[in-house]
Image (cartoon, rainbow, N blue to C red; front, side):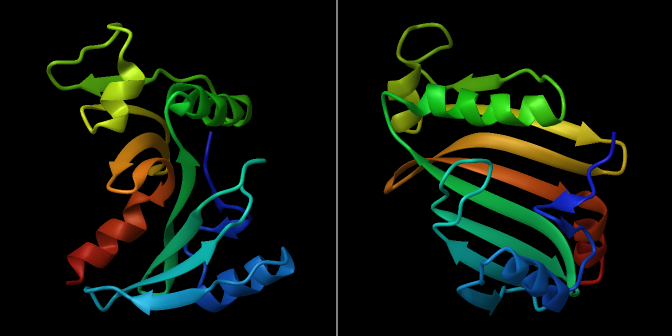
Length: 169
């Protein structure tokens, strides 16, 4: 199987073309900004729906004007973190394939102790799963603990384009 892009935006697509695709969906990026590395530029949108779920934000990363990564952030909180993670995962499994969830927990928490929600909320635990395609493209879903709370991060990425940008630095 291959992964061609994100939301109808093919990997390698230019920023103006990506904006055109987004506008055709009734969306418009709220801001575009350069990163610390001059070859990288990010476009962001707030409150867009992706995967039948409202996101907090969606960011698109361009390396040398080639689309290479999208990140979607969904709000979640205890006691629904694991259920929300599994819901997003299940939607992706229907489209791509089933995959295992990996979990990491720091002491005093451990997998299966009945305190997974608490450990993730406090930053002592993380859930992650991924889909990997032959063309060095992948999708990763993970929990992230921020100061403001827990989010689900869904990342679509083309490793080859990102590696090219890093090599050019």
